[in-house]
Image 1 (cartoon, one colour):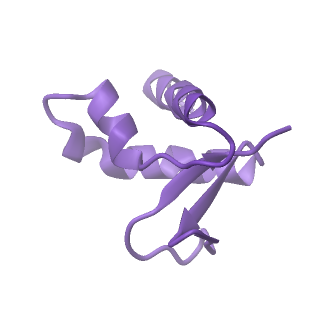
Image 2 (cartoon, helix red, strand yellow):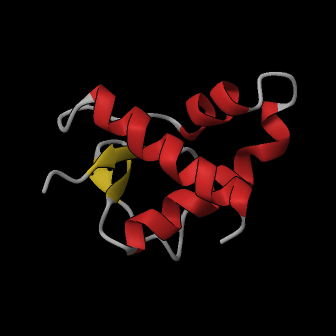
Length: 84
């Protein structure tokens, strides 16, 4: 994981934690927070870092409120902190 991905990871965790265990964040919120001028360019990287965090058990990724197969994501996702 490079430095930028590490910062993205920390930002995802911080924003999802702040939102609370019963709510979700959108990857675009993270991208807009970190890269306000060109956030769309970073969306795929934010999604990939979120998937990595999901695989580590730190967040869960959902679509329409239901867990999603991270190997077969199509469309918008939401990110939720996993409470420990």
